Image (cartoon, rainbow, N blue to C red; front, side, top):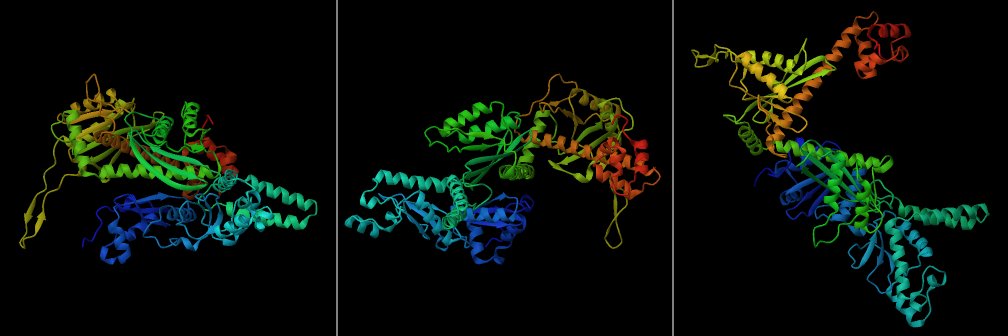
Length: 636
């Protein structure tokens, strides 16, 4: 027996937050649904040596071919979503909540000529509409009794119904108005079915108007001193509230919505769709799309909605909910809402959730989308075949003699022409080598091209003369003794240099190569606007295909160089202001840290008034005035 699961996800790919996970078989059937406070910790338990697993667990993981998860905000939401999905998917390997007879349902027998409302624990009945399950059987009984006053649908058994029909006498419920008595012809079959449909619409839609009416009647009865009636109405109101209260994640039972979270970068977008029906999350979809063209978030929203709700020719129409909640509205949102309304057959509210539960779920959807995008990028990066193909394609696109196995990328960062710094990041075989990253401080420069020239001259001086190869001798006992020095990693020769910028920057880099005497090294610039690659002295750029692995690799290099340069610049600015503050009498290391922590940045500290600075613990008015006089922003 194999001791490992070949499809298991990498441990680093699994999020550490709370969530719900599903194991799937080859046909897409859900085998198991579980919840976890930490998805990574819980799922790791399933992927140990097979011999160490319980027999049932071993059978489940060997039957499964994939595992999917959804991130939620809290353990409570994980519990609620797990419960709902167990009932929805009926997974064969679940034990908890598996027995439907443990929980009562409110049901309506739609297949009967005269539909019947009743309470059951059998979820397997055919032709029956179920609502629930509920935890309190008494609340369901009282609620049914209350609803029968408003919707007097038949609730008797078939035997009682047939006897009343033979004798022509209605039962007690018919006499007190809790049944429309179709058995004796007080209503027709069609009229009774309409009552049953209204009953179902109330339960399915969570219509709170009846609840509000009961509450108002209760208050009126109390004001008129009809206390017995008020008490009865109170009991009916509380029972109805019990059945209508949320049984899953966040919404009232009236919510009928699709909520989208979208995370994207220049080349790809991840979409997370939460499907909410009757106030309950009925499903979650997630997918990643490559962006053939550059799209901002509003354009992506339109693209996603068109692809989600446009059904293929000849297929059943896609269900469109009453609300479609998106992260940003596209420019033609009115037309898009109208299109959705035509698909639905009634008005669709297309909007951005601003506050409350829907905004909170929007953050959850975005969290899932961000994780999906990160997972997609990390898997794409870790794919050896994709990396090899990307390096080969880059070699062909740039006409390089060999595949660029070692690439160094440079970026310049400054703040309004001051605090100019540069970064160098290194990728080998398409993967970052962070221990070989370098940063540079540039004391004086005229512009970005001069900065590029200075940095590359400093870098290339290590390549002018190769350092001696390490040498070794064999000792008397046969051991190897190193006698020479190995070249430093900074002296390793790259196959390709990339600079962040267009033709001016790459020409400056080429000039540095000529002046340093290193002539057999390729250099290219990447421009941010269209992601095109510029070669020295070439009038036209090289355009890599959108979504191609080689463009993805170059973009990652550029973004990593930018991130590393920005982090160094921030550190440098912070150290500069700290040194300046420590020169002020009365300011020690602890007070300097307190100031920087309170204001968050040197810029905000410089713009702060003496009164604002004096609010920091340990800083009085006199010391605050000294700080303003020393470092205060004259334009603040």
